[in-house]
Length: 80
Image 1 (cartoon, rainbow, N blue to C red):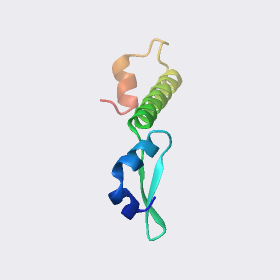
Image 2 (image 1 turned 90 degrees about the vertical axis):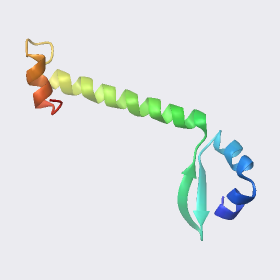
Image 3 (image 1 turned 180 degrees about the horizontal axis):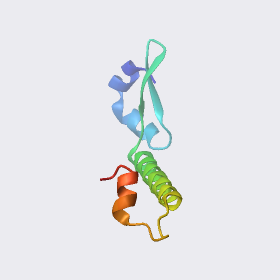
Image 4 (image 1 turned 90 degrees about the horizontal axis):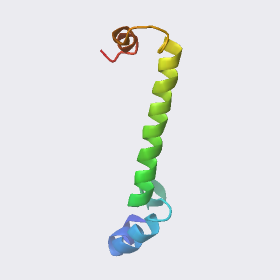
C-alpha cells in the first residue's frame, strides 16, 4: 500500500493490518509496516517467551540449581 493510499483511507489499511502486516511504500520502496493490535500482541508475547527460554538455557549452563550462589550467577550474566 502506498503512503497516498494510506492517507486516503487509513481505516482500510488498519482493517487489512488486522489479518496480516501491510507494507507501506513510497516510490516503490517499503518504508514501514503496519500491524494490527492482535498481531502486535502475539509478536510481543513471542519475543518475551523467547527471552525467557534464553534466560533459562543460560541459567542452566551457568550451573543454576547446582549449588551456585544466585549473586554469583547474576554477576556472570551481567545482571548485577
